[in-house]
Structures are given as structure tokens and as C-alpha cells.
View 1 (cartoon, rainbow, N blue to C red):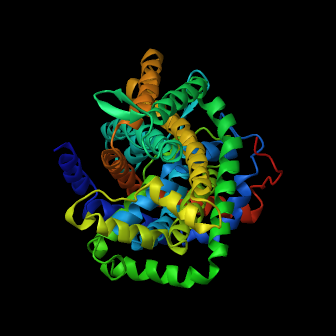
View 2: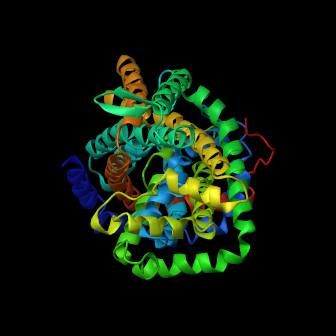
View 3: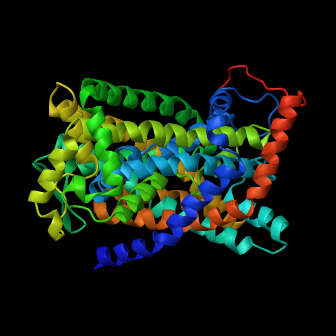
Length: 496
């Protein structure tokens, strides 16, 4: 009954109106910015690793991006892509990429507005994000008080952090991967919470919660110091393994791409009727894409607001590289790996045989499907592939837990007007959620996360549409000053 209720709510939240709003906002911003996300991508990548001299903020632009990437590069890149492909067919990957192309413009706008409307608190820290550009920016634009909408966004952000994308989905993904690797046959089970759980799951919950507490208590500077080292390393290592699998099966790439494109418009032609209509592929692709890259969600600008910069456009460019790296690069690598390795076809047949058409749970889903792909993709044992996925997922998900704690705390700060005692209590609630996350079912976990993501996205996207004129004006002014020499770029390599 709980699962049916969650599925019903998820269907309402992620219905046609929100899909239209997400894609519509991205298309609107793409047009108003004249396809800036592709015209200025090279400059954005330069700014990504070059800090701004004399910029005001708490961490470097790269540190802010690394914090944002730590939150976006997570289970969505490994588990999320796999669950989207199982639920929506290979076509979900196509729509995920299309949404990301427009999402880069959305992410740019979020980063720009985060700097423009951020505030400096009495203790010297910076606070910014959708709640402030909703409150301040929309009031300037419309003349009405929108603080209530900013509070609503912050509430959804707190819930998403503690009960959805920030904690439960991440540690659940780590625990499932560890379970599949260390105890796939359930040989070491213990009774707990009225159920039977593998010792590997219990140990994972304790270790991840403990490590999270050690970093989280240190705040944004400690989070940034950890993520600036871990995020680049884990992303590069994961992409290298994916590329090895793809090049090993290079002859299968055209067929895989054909399957993805055909399934985007006619899923049953590829999946054998396992998934439904084109809308299902579109829905799952956009929902999982938002889960992965968070474009339009309103989370990344919370980290961007702490960046050491005086130029909102510059930080907008840096922020948009997150979507490019996360979805267009890493998620595409995962999706192609699932297809060229033959893992998707194998899983699809096994799922049909198990009765997925009649509502049974899939045999291969989430981390299990990605582990199958890595095991089949190279001439090594399935155990080696499972270990690589487990290691990557552990790093990815752990840093996502750290990044989302910062987001959720900033939202809670806005809700409570900076009540430090309340923030400390929320911190420990967040860590407790990490501890209990592995003991919830996968389907419920992802559905809850999707619901809170959608609820967060709605007020943020409304603000982006209302403030699209401000975004276009600031962009035009920055490049005018840059072209005239009024603004001098600083390209000294500096990311720490």
C-alpha cells in the first residue's frame, strides 16, 4: 500500500506539467542566451580551473563546483541510469541527454542568480540559492512578496536532503553494491528491525554514517577540501573504465546508438513491450537526469553562492560545466556501457522471464545491472566488474552525502533564520538518516527521492522563468565588458 501510494504521488508530481516546465525553462533560457551553453563551453571549462583573484567568498570557484559535483556525481550516474533504462527502456538515455543539453542553460542561470542575490551573514559566511533569488529577485521583478515560495523551496530542500537524494538513496546504493560483492548468496544474515539483513549491509551503514559525521561536522570548508581531491579522481577513474569497455566493443556502438534512438520514440520495438509508451521513456529519462545532474532542481546554486568571485556570469559558466561533466559525459558512458556490453539485452530477457510484465520486481535493476555490464564488458571475472562498480559507487555516493548535507543545512539555515542549535540538531538527523538508509527497499527509496526532487524543482523553475530577462541582461553586460577590455580575465591556474 505504501509503494502504491508513493507511486501515485510520484506520477502526480512528475506529470506532464513538471516535464513541460523543466524542458520549457531550459528551452526558453537556451533561446534567450543564444545557445550560450555550447558557444561558451570552452571558456566555461577554462574558468572551471582558474580562480578569480580578489573574489569574495568562502571557497574557490573550483571548490564550489567540486562541492556541487560531489552532490551530483553519485548513485544517479551508476544506479540512476540503470533504473531509468529498466523502467523506461534505452530511450530514457536519449531523453536524459536531450534534457541535459537544455539543462546546461538552466544550470548557468542558477549559478548566475546565486551570486547576484547572495547575502553575507554576520559571521562572514555567504548564503544564497533559490530561496534568495525567489525572495529578492522575484520581488524586484514583480513587486510582490515571494518569501513564502522561498520558504517552501527551503522546506523541500531539507526533506530532499534528509529523506531522499542526499542520504537514503546514496547509502542504499553503497549497501546494495557491497551486499552484491561480499555476500551475494545471503550467507551471513542477521535479524534487525524485524527483518533479515546481510552483515555487509549493517557494516556498510555504520562505516558510511561514521565517515559522514567526521566530515560533515567540519562544515563547507572541510567538505570542499575533501571533494576537490576525491571528485576529480573518482570521475576520471570511472570514465576510463567505461571507455575501456566501450572501445573493447567498438563494433557494437552503432547498434547500441540505434537501439537508444529507436527506443526513445518506440520503446516496445526494442524492449519487447517491457516498458510502455514514449512518454514513459521521456518521463524516466528526464526524472533520472534531474536526479543525476540536478539542473533546475535548485541545489547547485546553494554551493555556487559560496564561491570566491565578484562576477555572477563567470560563476554561472563554471556551474553549468557540472551538467556537462555529470550527464553528457559520465551518464552517457554508463548508458553506452550497459548497451555495448550486452548487459541490457541479457537483463531484459531475464526480467521478462521473471514476470516483470506482470508486475514482478526486475531481476536486474540499479547497481546489479551496472555490475553485470562491468562483468560482461571486459575479459575479466564478474567479481572484478562488481568490485569496480562497488568502489566507484562508494566514492560517488559518499561525496554526494557530503554535498547534500551542505545544501540541506543552507536550506535549514534559511528556514530557521540561522538558528545554530537547530542546525546542529538537523545535522545529526541527517547522519541518522544515512545510518538507516540501507534498510529501506530500493523502489521506495528512489520514488521518495523523485517526489522531493520534483517538489524542489517547481518553485525554482518558476523563478528562473520570471528572472530570465535579468539573466540575459547580466550575460550581455559581462561579455560587453569582457570584449571591451573593461573586465580582465585571470587565467592563472588555481583550483585549491
